[in-house]
Image (cartoon, rainbow, N blue to C red; front, side, top):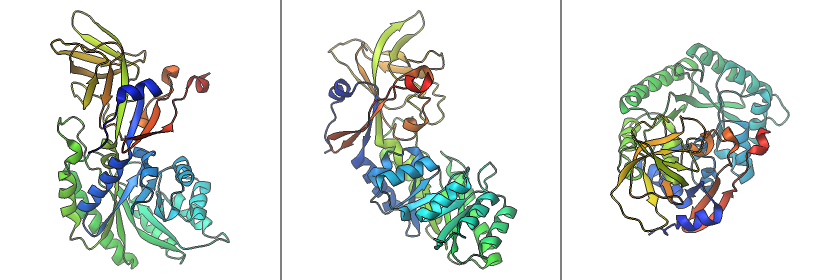
Length: 387
């Protein structure tokens, strides 16, 4: 049984709000995903979902999708083996590509003809070595290349023996319905088959962003529901292609919680309100338009109080009417000083929040390593950056 966390004690020691990430759950989550993958697939964790989890997972047999120079610096800082890095990102300069090339990352993703030219230039350097690339096919947005541009890039790359084409990258979005995925797989496999024939490419792989859904508002134990993954795995298990499956949200979502304190309780003729010391600057469930949806939230009272449960609107500390975390949470006698613990907060909230608005402090990030608590990031004042 996992050690029970004393959120009240943590709030007293570290202040609120704060995030707490579960190291053991993160590793187990990856193992559960890997167990359900077919033999022709390997996992690639998209670290933009939560870069803090990268250090937890750096010894696992997976790849890591890195989409910016800053994320690459994180990987260097924690000592991640470059042979596990897929360096992606729609905006890469020549210096970015050269840096990744010199680090000897496993794979560099080419998102445009310009990226191709940058790599060809980098490969002319004295430290020339074999370098794998994947070329990204656009899904009808700003990412990737047209089929025409991609074919021209392949023709140029084939003239440089040290650059090895590992495969094609394809991603169209997150939280996708199975119907969309089931239509994309035949499309990308047919496209890769044609490329193999046209350019005599051998052992081409498909790097696919599956965008598997994670339902934050189902009211069920979503972290143990792998039905979407299992259904997807059946689609590709008999494929002639090898797959690298990029997952971010699907890996990270259940691996973190967010703890915030109720700092005021009030109401008017129509609504009851609990105001918290966090808000939408820290809590970012997919879509953000919460409406009447209720994510997993636990109420931790600081004193015994009993009354009939009532519905409360949970509002944050930002001076904007948009700062409504959720509109209808049933609570029993909430009081100033009580804690609210939001579950399934492991993906994106830590990195996508509007942290500089109103100069509120940056929340601390804690690690729960099977009951042992450590600090991954201290709470930081942001006013220093705003004035």
